[in-house]
Length: 460
Image 1 (cartoon, rainbow, N blue to C red):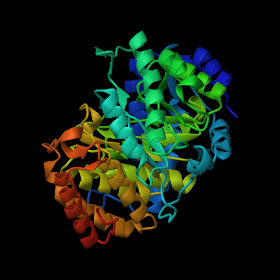
Image 2 (image 1 turned 180 degrees about the horizontal axis):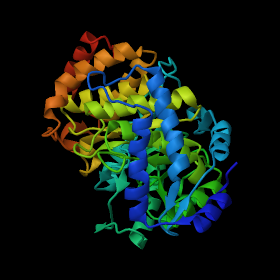
Image 3 (image 1 turned 90 degrees about the vertical axis):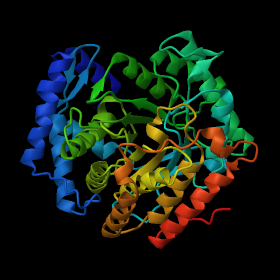
Image 4 (image 1 turned 30 degrees about the vertical axis):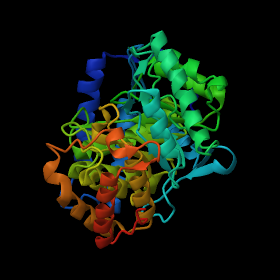
């Protein structure tokens, strides 16, 4: 198997190349070549694709893409290449089950297949969205921990320490990352979920020094949590990220590589983006030594997962991976709309359905493109989890009809979505429940979902 020392040897001795040449002259043209060779075609009338042979072609194209272009180390300016034997050996030896958490909250993340009845792993929270204060952080994470379907938590990112804006690779980032870990554990303790895994507790730690500082056990991180490390698009790494890998490996926790190829970026359209996602899965278990993967493909125009072509990418990529590997893959989705709007619930329902019926688990979610401070609540991930459990086992053809009906409710608004309300405008922090206004929105949404054949928990 390829180990971290092997990755470093390849990063130091691979073919020299500029980053621009790798991205524009090596990666992008080869993606388009693979799409043509494998005759991969996006069908806008079917956002949930139902063609097994197409999924298998996307997988083969992704494997060939990694073989042809490798990964790229921006620090050394060299291409990291892998042989077919190395890739397939790593795929064979990747785990098909991992345990996270402690005590009664200890659960197994398992490989899922297309139309699998097994409920998805629900990694719930903000996906690293920004929050303005310790109070907001605690309010959100307490809410996530109280959701019955929560298997793991993805925390917000702290943006200020002592009233000062966090600056990258500074003492402020180190202190913020340490606070991130402490507050996340405290929030879970407050609501009786002491053992729940906090799988991106270091959302605030962008730099390697902050990551290393905040993973000290005194701040609350455990080997049973997940250590998430993000890949640069497309298929790039640097020594700072490999430093994080070395630290995480020393702590004994399973690494999750997150990656977000842009639809409309270096991978081109939906066909190339699906292929790129598959290649990133394989690159992750090699270069980042990942045991689980977290794709969060984003639409270049809408910065969301809910557009029609994005849903096709999620379903096609998911089916390619779940049909041809036993990798543990968790799809993160983003919405354009904000809290307290029907649109945010319809958007996440569509993206979750696309992922779950295609064999993926879910991380939910980045609300309102995940860039506004405190523009998220515990409601959106809860609804995502309820939908994920409800559609597990659904046939792709039925899911396709469901998603088409959901698209009809929000697709025309993607260019100018409603931002809704901020956290404390629609969430009662003392009662730990949505406002009356938001509760009314949720009840109406659930009535619509019931009419569409998806029964969710009655709203209290």
